[in-house]
Amino acid sequence: MTQYQQRETELVYYPQRLARTDTYARRLDKAFAAALHAQGWRLTAERQAILDVLVEAKHHLSIEELFDHATRKHPRLGRATMFRTLKVLREAGLVSRIAVPNNGYRYEAHYERPHHDHLICVACGRIVEVQWPEVEKVQEQTCRVYRFTPLWHRHEIFGRCQSCGKGAR
Image (cartoon, rainbow, N blue to C red; front, side, top):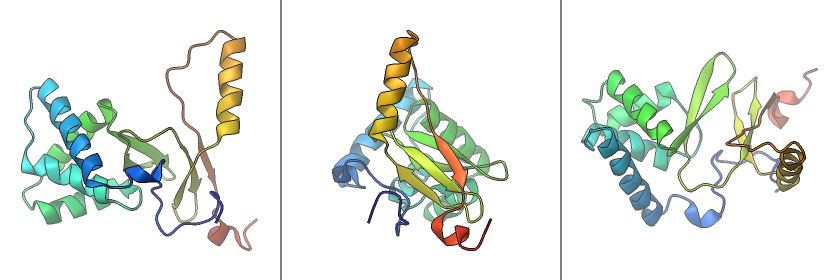
């Protein structure tokens, strides 16, 4: 299977040893607690439920999916807590948000994961994670030529996946 073919799960952990291990979850929990502490907040069961769902996810979660799964773990979780918690997670670099068609977003645990980009199907919403070392090299060279210091970047390519592209033009 190439990196461009469909996968059973969307979330690919580079390198594979990061893939939802207990030690990864513990390091992420510790970083989350530190980020909350920096905001003057404490780690509550509701906030932990949100992080747990993100770590256990096998695909990029919509806000509705995240809320649904997190409230199963902690029924008292409110939407305001979820939005505030996601903001802290994103600002701390622990979670990233991917824009999808129809003005929506999907979320993924981002902590300690190497840079990767996304192929996003506009028909079914499937997201495929890819790494392109050749593209990264060209970007680095271009920045050197223009004496530009990049802070971050992301590529999100919108199109149709193999399943949705059949017969569509």
